[in-house]
Picture 1: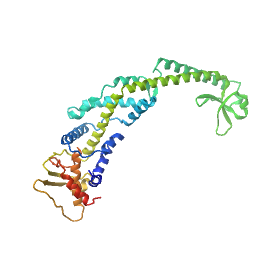
Picture 2: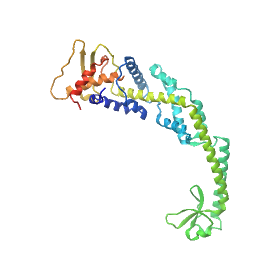
Picture 3: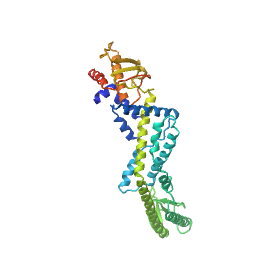
Picture 4: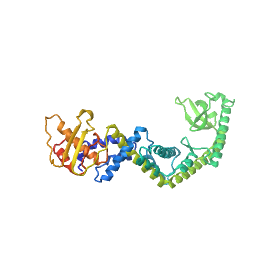
Length: 383
């Protein structure tokens, strides 16, 4: 099919409108590539799916569809040997949660959409993976109790931090440095406790300068009295980071073991994204399912071009059989152009498996007859 012709009759614009209802980039791309089909069974199946999906939308406009673009990226990174970060695992958990929600949602819609609802049941059970990840990840961080080793390490880190803070506070309030400090407030610089020392007394307080005030009158010094505690704390933090990485690598490997099941779930999500985008669009333009015919006849009842909405008069036309030509005449008020574009678009939408903006009972031809109409449209150089 000539792309210029499809654009001339408004099919390209129709696809863009459908795309606006899709949630994922992959879904939008699939809709952009939607072309007319020649298989009547495939066309009717697509229309039936949209009809069922519209019925679902009438019951609930919120379908638990999750984006799959980020999950695809996480799989790719994990297969390169890079562990999934804790904050990224929250997106995995959200996806897994939506898989279960989607199955429950579709289970409750079986009575109105037996075909569409059944697709969700192909998603295999992922609760074990979800429980494993949620048991180790909490609020975007590796949980303290993800492993006994991590529990012990973080307890040591907390205890040492408390000891160090108490020691610095003791120094700040004691007589040893009292006259050298701007105040007795203990603050942190780069995660380390410091004393606010007056610049002129810098040499009186032995330690490491970690920062300077904006005015330059105060230097923030980590006193040497806590150096040994800080060194011990740094060691424990290094051990903690290593344990966190080990846990994340373990979770990443577990995630990859479910790759096949996850990809299947992603495919189901993708198909639902495309399907419900079509359904939302068709519902928005009050479209109906046409009856296809292969006898080279066409009967349209109150067909409307969605681009013009209420601005155009609904079109009813019967053509084919003994009638081999149809002459459209009239003044230059746009009616002829809209008529040709409407006939062409309605037929192409039908062959793309979409519901069409016309009253029930319409019969677009399932044949190449619309090609002659489109050639005429193109010959008119419609823009």
